[in-house]
Structure formats: C-alpha cells, structure tokens
Length: 325
Image 1 (spheres, one colour):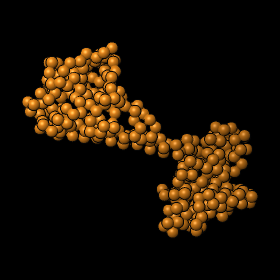
Image 2 (image 1 turned 45 degrees about the horizontal axis):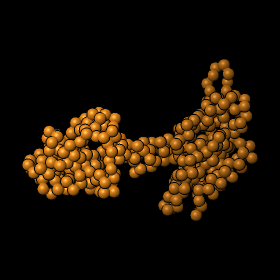
Image 3 (image 1 turned 120 degrees about the horizontal axis):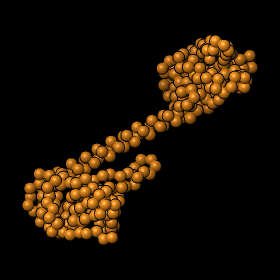
Image 4 (image 1 turned 90 degrees about the vertical axis):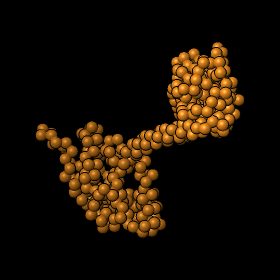
C-alpha cells in the first residue's frame, strides 16, 4: 500500500514541539522545509526507505515509530529497537555519515513523519541559527544512551563470563578459570621474581565413598572440602575444583616451606571436617592427599601442574592422608 504524502507547506503542521527546532526563530526555516515530504503511515506499516533516501532525517510529528537495527558493534549480532516519539527523530548519523543506515522503520501507531533530505538539513544547519546546536545535542543524547547500553551489555557479559568460571557444586573456581588464569599468575611471578606455590589435592578413595553412601552425600563431601579450603586460605590465594574429586590451591608469593605448611593445615582440617551430622547414622570423615610444588625459573603453567601432580601421587603411594613435596 502506498503511503499518503504531501509537502510540508501543505500539511498544516508547524515546527512546534520538534526538538531539532527548539528555540529556533528563523522564519527562513519554514521556507526551506516547504517542499520536504510529510508522510502518513498506518499502524503496522513499514516505512519504505529507498537506498537513495537513506541519508535523510525522519522526524515524528504524531504517533510513534519503531527503529530496528542490526547491532554488530560488540559480540554476536543483536536486533535492537528504539521507539521514536513526537518531536524526536532518527537518521542523524546517516546524514553525517553516508555509510550509516537508519535500519527499518515501522509505525507503532498511526503516524505522521516529516522527511528532511540530507541537502535540506545541511542548508538548515548553514542558514538557521540553533539547528546545528540542537542536532549536536540530539547526537550527544543518543551517544550517551548507546554508551550506557554498551556498558550494561559489558557488565552482563562480564557477569556471565565470571559465572562460567565458577564450579556450580562447590563454588570454587573451575578448570576453565585455571586454564585461563594460571598462565597469567605464572607470568606475573616470573616478572616480579616472586615465589609461587601450587597444591594438588585428591580426596582419598572418593569413588568408594560415593558407592558406599550415594552421590548426594558425595556432593556434600565435595562442598565440605571446598569449605575447608575457603576458610583456611588467604584472600590472595585461589581454590579450584580441578575435576571430579581433585582440587587445586594456588598460593602467590609463597615458598615451598609455606606451601607445605598450608597443605599440612588443610590435611588436618579435612580429616576433622564433619560431612553429615546425623545422630542416628555416623558418617565417616573424609581425608585427602596433597602434592606441593613451587614455580622454578622459566617453568610454565603446564609443567607446574605436572610437578604438583607428581608430588600428589607420591603422597598417595605413601599411604594417602598426607602431604608430599
């Protein structure tokens, strides 16, 4: 269906309420706009914007338009829709930058739109005092809104990124976090010439524990072990669920002797931890084996983990429930 349209001079509309012309008193404005198109659009109709009319300013005189654009500025493609109310406009960027597209315009209700061509807008900027100021103000408002939206999106993205780095059962960091952050901690320790200790932990006979008491109690045991780590470590230390019943502790600025002391403390507290307080059925306590190592010159993250893993197996071969370096 064709849109009903007429020139501004015959439309009966005035400049009152149009933000672009706030405090603009130049009588020449009406003359400059005389041949600009005023278009009537029925609710639900899409405003057909020919390619040669992309560089136009669309001002809502009555009703409301929805401007839908494909946003590829940050991350995956997203459809973004803005509501344009009477007095407001869309297309400022397309006039200033011929490569910018105004996207798709749809009438959210029966609407009347004033369409100002690019050359007409530039003439208004040159000849009518205040138009340039108002246009700059409108662009500034839209830029601030876009920046606010981007910040919100970044915060949401960061929230989900952090959430993806947390083990849902124990609340500890997960393997993905370790893979991403341990190389950074290793590089920082090398740069600052500071010690770095790492402890690999394995809950003893955990498969048998699960078989004997069920996976729900096994999950409770893992959460109890995580709680032991959280309560015993410094704020600057990191506790990670490496996988299954294996846990990892990273101790920045810690020597081998300091790492051994921390591991011994954790070993004792793990042994004393209460998994399930039941007055009828006494649940067994868990124990764990600990392998401790420190970062050596030019050693990388993978080698550091391998060294701690080797120490862990020495503790297990020696009888478990103990610390080995």
